[in-house]
Length: 587
Image (cartoon, rainbow, N blue to C red; front, top):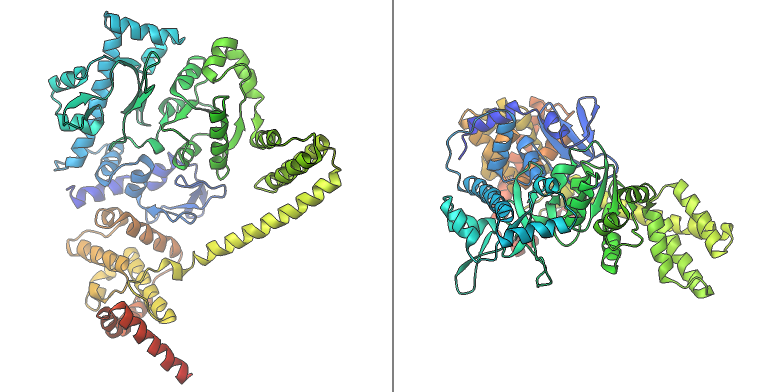
């Protein structure tokens, strides 16, 4: 394990505002910084960074923590790797440690690096196979510099060539299996995952190779073989070529379906082309793009599958602050073919004239209906009205209402009357949903009791526990005094009990109970809860008298809580019902 003192020093040397600011555009507001949350899609900032206690909290999705928590989530790392990453950022050498997971992660990345070098060398070798692979890439219109830039290569037609090579470099089979470059058959035999395929490496944001995509050069099946998910590769969170695109000055990204489309666009000078890893775009990938793009142009294949992918992607981007437009490719099935056939200048002209998301969706709706007939025209208007009543600006709504009237021959006042009714209905629905959300954001919803207690009494005790733990985080010097009166067993709520035990443990060892230290002792959810408490009490001075009040409230509840703790759920319900009846009779 990494020494707590070392973790403390890492956190001390890491300014959370600088760390978060390297991923999120922050705005300074008084004593805090705010921005759009990088962990969920939002258009109104609800993500807050608190420099004074070096924490963050999102009031939209509930994610919170310290610098280590942020690094874990933003870079998809485990705890130890997050500490290592921040240590490297702070220029701190790592202490000696026994960290099997960390060592394996490092070995897997090395396996991928040496595999990529092997694949490239096999393509560059003066062999019939190597020449055939190189001819394939050149035949796809790629220059030698592009081939080198993307690290393209070739996996030989052998069941053990890569394994034998990596074994000679000192790797063990367990490491090769963990990296996904070899597999085990049903009979227990080991074999290379990629055979007789041209290879495309996939990089993470730091430039590490985390996976590969292999494609046949003929018509064999399966056409593609990809690295399975590993400890370094989660396809739902990875974007192909984002490590290159993020260096561009442009904030307009081109989102393609396939790796080849991306590579062709980069060669043509469109250096913000990226593609989702996996079969379809995910919410995690949309969040990732939000950090780098102000606008995304969807540039999918022109077939039916591409249209479905476009529709799915538009829905995912609808909750994002990113502007989205759609590129249609007349005369070609994909961007790679279009550029080869018509050139990059024609592609750029198309790019600058892309239709926005509303126009694209209206066109798709119109295709579904025969607007030459009265019934088809009415169905088209009805569905288009629902679209225009959604999350668009009043100006956009006015413009497209006029267009809808013109193309259907229905009077504009009639269209506007229907639209006004649909907007009112949508707003009522949104208000109801917002009310439901607010009901789940109060103190009662944040409190997780291990059993059912009488309403106000339970909430009062639980709130006292939360406020006491928050006070100890803000004023650690009070821990010895509180320990004399409250034991961990005196807590009703498991998460607060865990936090209190961790705080007391730190104090006993002479370690300040900061979030950075506690994050190695508590679950991610518990850390998020503590971050929420700190955020809720950021401007609240917790005095000695407040702490005394919380302790008193908890002490008064101890006999009842211990009695309740010995009951079965059925006995507890009956007991609480009897208390409620007595209370009602007394009133």
